[in-house]
Amino acid sequence: ASASLCGTWDIISNENFEGYMIALGISPCVQKVAAKLKLKKVIEQQNDQFIVKTLSFFRNYIISFRVDHEFEEFTQGLDNRHVKSLVSWQGNKLVCEQRGEKKNRGWSHWIEDDKLHLELYCEGELCKQVFKKNGNQ
Ligand code: VL7
Image (cartoon, rainbow, N blue to C red; front, side, top):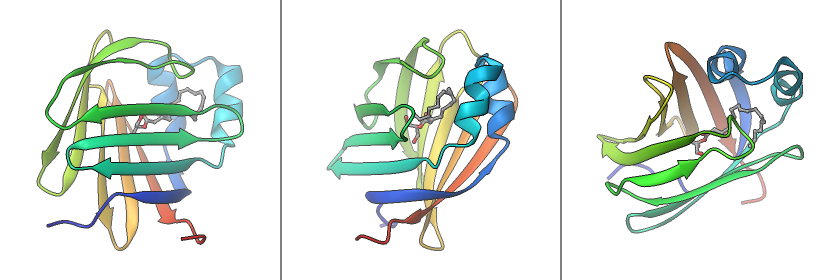
């Protein structure tokens, strides 16, 4: 079994977040604010059911899903698109495909060296985020 994604995590690096936001068509004004955010990720799991919270003082974004069950996702407060999302395990990676207007869109989470890794991708742009476990737990 692979290490659990669960917990509260604080961002420590964020590569090409700008490219990802441009691919999503985020306005330059919002990009500027978003680029400075200290994102927090809170992940809860019960069997095949997940809740993933992306938190910041500016906006929060929360999804819940069951692994291998497609769901309708509305990316409210992000790019405000409707996508069909499917999350599945691919080895030790929790991988989400987000089908919709934007091609090759999705994300992937895994644990490496006690850190939470996240790749966010959209139309050829790849953003790489790394989170460390929050010290309060
Ligand atoms: C979600 C945001 C940029 C818009 C605001 C920035 C607010 C805080 O999809 C994501 O996470 C997955 C995997 O963990 C689970 O939902 C990433 C944050 C990326 C993309 C869009 C900028 C406006 C950020 C909510």
